[in-house]
Amino acid sequence: MPLTLLTAAQGKPMLVELKNGVTFNGHLVECDNFMNVTLREVYQTSADGDRFWKMKEMFIKGNMIKYFRIADAILDQAAEEQEKQRAAMRSRGGSRGGTLAFALPNQSPCHLFFWTMDNAAMLAYHLFGAFQLRRS
Image (cartoon, rainbow, N blue to C red):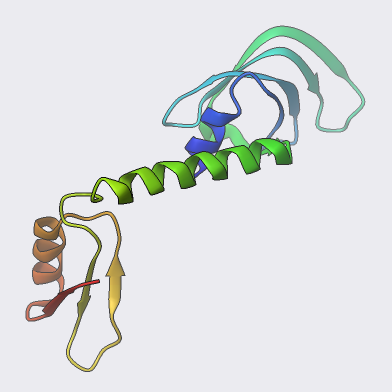
């Protein structure tokens, strides 16, 4: 969900706080798989809150980010889009292997989601040896 959320927030205002306490307020231009973000029309606030800077654009590395603050409407929009995608996948038959559950003897079932049948069976065999497969 986090990357889906950032994708839905493109073009929208957000706050980014870094691990050192510095904050950036601006509009999200783009993000990548490492959560590196580019903001435009950025207002930077120092960690102590005493100094402010305005910048046209700012690139922030994902490993420096403590958290994002995004409007609730964007959160709701991202959740709706994700649910629509899931519904579309269900109507087309889902992924190749579907959802797989496996149970060890005298153990509670462990669920692996978004794995094909072949990959999950191979993983379970290597981790646990003997096991029973059942589709859920």
